Length: 157
Image (cartoon, rainbow, N blue to C red; front, side, top):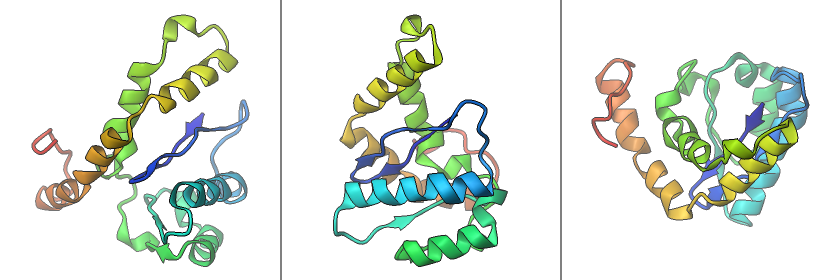
């Protein structure tokens, strides 16, 4: 399993879970949030920045909310996002597809090969592409509201 973050200043390096490791409150709190904090600081330097997540159960856990409130200047509380919002996540609605298109699957024979290919593919993602993808975010939010949370069918992207 792999995780990634997308920002106006670029994407994070991929975070690879250990084989068999699952995302739960403990791994999210102990591994993934510190990774995102470190990568956000790398991408934004001394600028203020916030962290968006959806309403998945490991994201809404009290200990996770407390950690986020303490460590991220701009905190979006758990009641502001739907439980599952792929239509509102630039990674889900665009960037992962672009990464997948850049993976040379014919070279993949092992898990380590796949990891290397994902790392190479993320480096090929153009910063302007990421910005364009993030730029449609507000229109997507409005569209989801307009359609009472229904799936968006390419009406604005």
